[in-house]
Image (cartoon, rainbow, N blue to C red; front, side, top):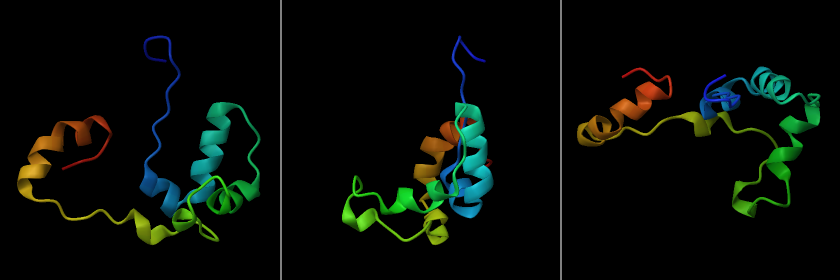
Length: 86
């Protein structure tokens, strides 16, 4: 616990590559029961814009774009703070 706050870091690519274990960990952290429907209904929610709705999680969206070296230099500290390696 940091500064009186419970925190959990969830990487988007983990959610895409390993949706069920990632969501189970999030549910455990939040103290709610995991339901398999969370993996499919959430991506079809009418609350989402139509262009973001899918029948399931699209793992291909986890691919990171190649960024110019100048951009990487600017965000390097933030990447490290979020648990990413250079």
